[in-house]
Image (cartoon, rainbow, N blue to C red; front, side, top):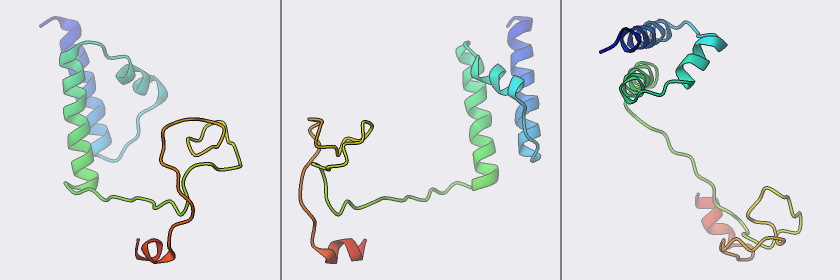
Length: 105
């Protein structure tokens, strides 16, 4: 292992420990993490990310979902939306659904 690899792992560990202690990292430090290229360093980063997530959020997930009351053929034609009538996206199209399933969701 080269000195650079050791330095990267040490720096990742230092930043990870600071985050576990409730501190924040600055832009330069975030860019260092973003710029990691060595797969071993990336695995180290992912390992720390998992530790930090588990420390602050535990080992459970919470899901949230939406139920479309109507899908496709929207007249608003927002350029970013797959529901727009202007685009052929293959998304399902249907009129307003019955209110009961929406209320249950």
